[in-house]
Image (cartoon, rainbow, N blue to C red):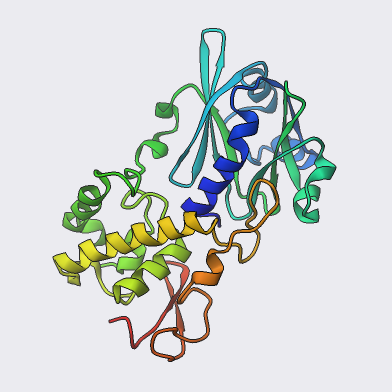
Length: 290
C-alpha cells in the first residue's frame, strides 16, 4: 500500500501537469460501470457515475495537496467549489499521459479505471490493479467525516503533542505500540513499512504495549517515524511491489530499509523475525529491539 512518501511523490509528479487545467470530461472503465450497476462502490465512492461526472466536468483544478495518504484536488467552476479526495488503496496510481498506451507498465495500462481528460490535451489516468482505491467528490471535508479525524501532518509542530496525547487514552494502553502508530488518527501517514523501520531505529519491539513505553521512548519513536518518512520522501518512496511514480519510474527507499522484508539485521547480523501484529506483518530484530 502506498504510504505517505509514496503518495507525496505521486502528488508531486502530477501537479505540474494538471494544476490550473480544466477537466473537460471523465471516462470510466467497464469494471467501474459494472460495479456501480451491481450496487458496488467500485473506486467512485458515494455518488452515481453520472452525478460524479456532472460535479467534476468543466471544473478547474485550482490546487492539489497531499493529506496523510490521500491526494486532494480542489476544483472550481464559476462560483461552485468541489473537492476530489483520492486514496490509492493497495495498488492504485495516477499517471499523466497523452494516451493510455503511454503508461509504461502493462498492468497499470491494462487496469485503468478513471480518465480525466484535461484541456491541455493530457489525460490524468487513475489505474488500480486491485481496485481497492477510491475517489470521492464532496462539497466539503465535513461530507467525509473520517477525513477530519486524521492527525496533523507529522512534519508540523502540532504533530508530536497530538501523538503524545493518545497515550492518555484507554483505547491503546493495552495494545501494541505498532498498532497505535499505524492509526492515522494518532500519526498521519505512517504505514506498515515505515512503522517497522521507525520501531527498529528506536530499538522498540513492535509488540510492546503502548502503556509500557516511558516518556523518552515515546518521544524518540515519534522522531524516528518522522525521520523515516522524510527518508522515504528523499529516496522517492519504496518500490517493493506495485508502487510507481506518476512517470512510471520507481523509488529507491527499499535499498535503505533495515528490517522490512529483510533477512538479516544490518546492525547485529541476527535473523530478522516476522510476527503478525494488528493484522499486519511486522519485521523486527529481537536483539536490537526490546
